[in-house]
Structures are given as structure tokens and as C-alpha cells.
Length: 97
Image (tube, rainbow, N blue to C red; front, side, top):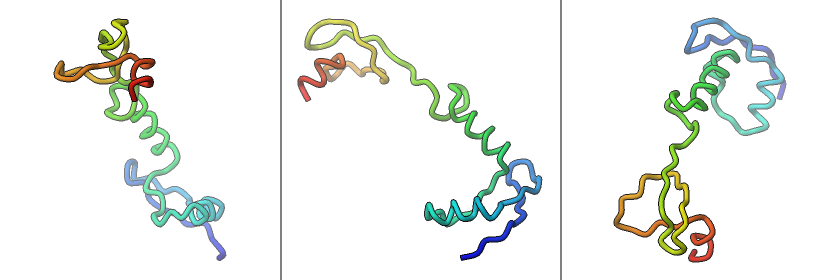
């Protein structure tokens, strides 16, 4: 299949950008059906906002300190324990799994 450069319009900034033949080949090889909706700067901006804790995405998780129900040591967990189930440190969790 032969690909040719195509001009698309970014859904975020409304600027035109080129979806070049090499990118189209990459999309085809990966099995992507949809063409990109954002230009490279807007894609990067969106990715960075997902990575930041305030960006509403997948940034740093809030950690909570708990006492392990098995060994009694302090542990950090990525969820707020409800108190109705035991919480384990990493080592005890692996041991009891």
C-alpha cells in the first residue's frame, strides 16, 4: 500500500498539520484504524497533562500509611483503607497471596 502525505486539522488548536506517509505506515503496521486528531504539540501537551497530579490523569498516586495486619509494620498503600478488611505490607501480601 502506498501512502501520501495528508493535511489534517487538529481538534484542539484547529491548526493544520501533516500526517505524513511514514506516520501512516506506522499506524497501518500497528493496526490503528483512526487517524490522529491532534497535532504533535497538542498530543504532547495532552500527554503531559495526564502525567501531572493535577491533570486528572495518571500522575502520582496518593499513598496512605497503614499498619500491616500480619507483621504490624508500617506500610504505604495506594488506596484509602475502609477498615473492614485487613491490609498487608508488600511482603506479607506476597506471602499470603
